[in-house]
Length: 343
Image (cartoon, rainbow, N blue to C red):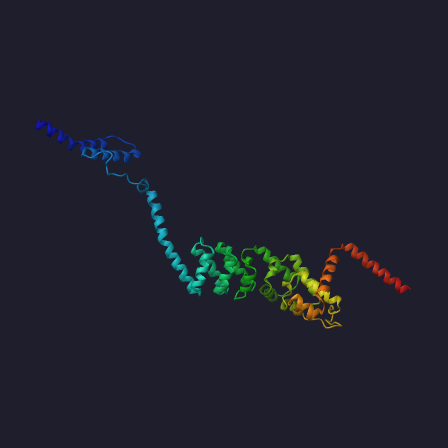
């Protein structure tokens, strides 16, 4: 009986070795090795006196066993460690440019998903154009799509604006009034510049001054911009220098025409002759366009609001009439004058 007990005990001790030898000698596909090892550990645990359901062995996660999963996990951890470093470098760089903590918080809240280096590249280009931190923050809050621009496009546009003379701090007003100057097609900008140079005959320096003082012209239709200049130059008798100084091109054609024609019919404005002379002293352009309608009527036109409203309706009706009818009316007027002269 004692001998039988010793044989059973020896068999228990040999069982793990037997299963291990079987596992080594039995050919297995590569995909089944982990399963075999797992079952072998289970059986060894049972043979040592434990239950199959009580086994403390837990199969390792599959992602930890595969090299690609380990690589992805490492990259994820490195990215998490890198993000605070990038944020810290971003904040330090902005402070070096002169941005306050308030400015930094504002910039970080504009486009939270934007990469710090992308934001830093765009902001650096604006600073290099002569903008101060405050105008940069205002422009980016007003036009956050600037932060999504490719850096190379931003650099090329910055170089083009410098050629137009809009660097060295002159870009502040342009960017505030027309932030799309960085996103609009360069061809559209070139067309407007071409109209000012070739059609309106402004000098290069005057074109720069117009873009600086009246950046809204970049949104103008090229044909309407040319007509606005022709009306001011030929109809009102205003020279190039005065057009630039008075910012006339920034006002709508409707406003300019209404006030000019109203003064003309009141006898308070006259188109200068070839020598630039008039029989009545014309009011200054700033007193015609830069003032409110109430001030214009009280000081320049010396007329009532009711009369001006009636005039604007009549002028609109005149402009709606076909050109043929107006031509017929003019020919009739000429015939009547000839008949009077004959009589």
